[in-house]
Image (cartoon, rainbow, N blue to C red; front, top):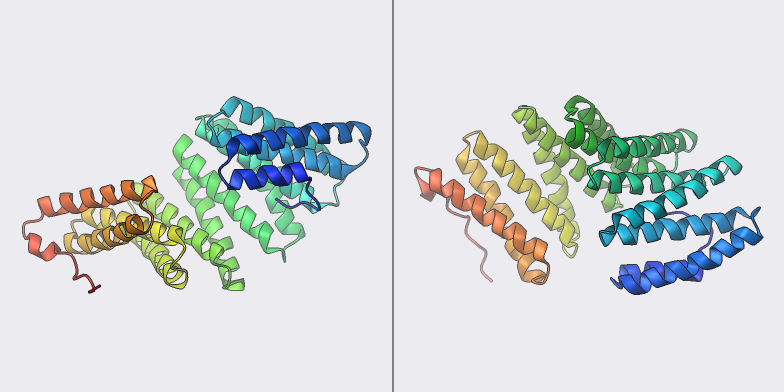
Length: 322
């Protein structure tokens, strides 16, 4: 989030959270909130004290949500929301207050979505989207606001699809997110995050299109995601998420091709995903998600070989000599 300043307690809470020390982070957030509550009470006309308090409560909400303490997290998000809503009314000329309010609404929306309260989650994400659209309209030259708007559109697309089966509306949100991220990737090619999130959006759209029976369009989206991720994995080989996401995109493309009966092509994608996941497990043996993904790839390969009449056609490509 954006902010002009940050209290030491909040900064320590963020640091401990990043280090995975949840107990210490929670202690620091509570200490910061106690100090900030007093400052707000003593100096109610100083917006920055209220902004600091809202930030600490929002960050504590994130920490509690990650711990599965949903009721407590919701209470913190709603407390932060009340403060931030008042700040946007009192200080309409300060865009960071609108930006932070949108972030908090998005966080609450994510929590509600996780709890299966998708109607309420949709309302929060639509409110966040409206705030972010306003920021893009008012400040079209600020890339962060377009990036945040793309995040809102992707989240809303997922909620519409999962919670209500409104595929047409979900598709519109995904396509709007893709348009924003394409423009950001073009304007700022040196920022890999835009390309990574563009690939994720294309992958999500591909899954939606496959579910609608639009296999040709779904394949095109998967292949576009793969092209982006292959370049990212090549340019940044030390970033495991790029390789992991690339493996996922190749696996889902393989599933689509498998369903279409294009078994040799499916095998190519399955083996590529398997090789990526084997390497990730070798590089990061303590991360359970990589081992779980590798097991999934092995099942996909085994299933394909079991139903193919000429399994030699599905042999893996030769591995390079070590």
